[in-house]
Image 1 (cartoon, helix red, strand yellow):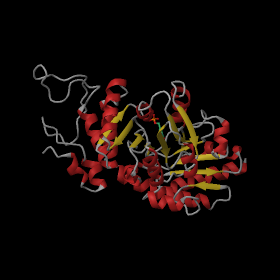
Image 2: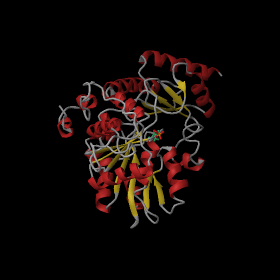
Image 3: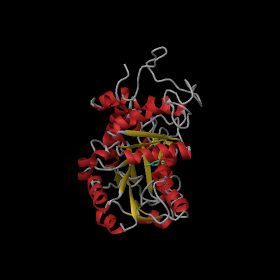
Length: 392
Ligand SMILES: *Cc1c(COP(=O)(O)O)cnc(C)c1O
C-alpha cells in the first residue's frame, strides 16, 4: 500500500509524474492526496506522534508534492516554498558575510534583485558573468567563492550554460552548483544527473502549468544540503500552503503531456517566425541557427515553448506585443494559455539598463510563452499582429 519512494523512481517519467510520492489516503482510500488544511496535529502522548507536529515543519500534502518533484528530478529530497524567490532565498541562506557567489548575468530579474539589494547589503559578494563562457565563469571564482548559480536556458535571451562543464568546475573548486531549471523542467533537462548539487524551480510556471498559484521547489540528493533546507523551511517559514501544494501536485500529473505539446508548438512557431522578414532574429535553442544548438541537443531532450524574437525597432516590438489577440500581454510563463511580454519594460525593468545592454536584452525584443492552444491559431494571431505592426 504505502509505496516506497525509491520504488517510484524505477518507473518512467510519465508514471512518476502521476504516482510518485503519493499513497492512497488511509481513512477512505481517496485516490487523490487530500488538502490537509490544518495547522497542527493531535499527539498520541507526550513525545509520541505520527511524525507531524506543526504544519510549518511538515504537512502531508506538501510531503507528497516534495516527494513527487524529487522523483522527477532524480533527487533524494524535495522542499516546497511559498514562491520561486523563497526557494532562491533558501539557497542564499547557505551563505555568510564574506562569501562570494558567481552568478549568471541573465538570471531571473527578481533573483538578481535579491542578490544585489539584499544579500550584498548583508556582506555577500557577487560577480555576474556570461555563463555561456566557461572561461569567464572559471576566471570569476575566488578563494571565497562558495556558490555557482546558473539558469539555462536563460530568460529571455535563451543563452545556455554547459551544465556538465559547470559541474566539473564546481567539483574542482569546491563550489555548490545551483541550477534554476524553471524554463526546461525535469521533463527536458535534469541538472542533478549532469552533476549539479541543487535544482530549483518557480512552480508558478511549467510545473503547476495553469497560472493559478505561486510557488517554489528545491531538489537535492545531498543529505547535508537537505538538512539545511528543512531547517530553513522551519526556521524562516516561507513554506508553501496545502492548497497551493495540491494545485502544483495536480499540475505535475500532466507535466509530460503538456511539455510535449509546448515543445511541438514552440518548434513550429519558432520555425515560422524565422521565415518572417519582420523578425530580425529568433532566439530558440531548438533552431539550428541558435549558436548553442549543439549543446542544447546534448543536455536537453526537448526545447519547450519559450521563444524570443527581435523585431526591426523598439516601436515595432511594442506594436507587436500590443496587437496579438490570443497571446495575452502579461508577465509570467509556462501556463496552458499563450502570453506575450516586452521584457525590457516588463519582466526585466528592474535590471539596470547597462546590464540589459550587455546581455543583448534590447528594447526591440519580445518574448512568447507558447501555450496549448491550436498552434495554427497561434500562428494566425502572430501573423495579423506582425502585419498590423508593419502598417503603422
Ligand atoms: C518566475 C521565475 C522565478 C521566480 O519565481 P516566483 O514564483 O515568481 O517567485 C525564478 N526563476 C525563474 C527562471 C522564473 O521564471
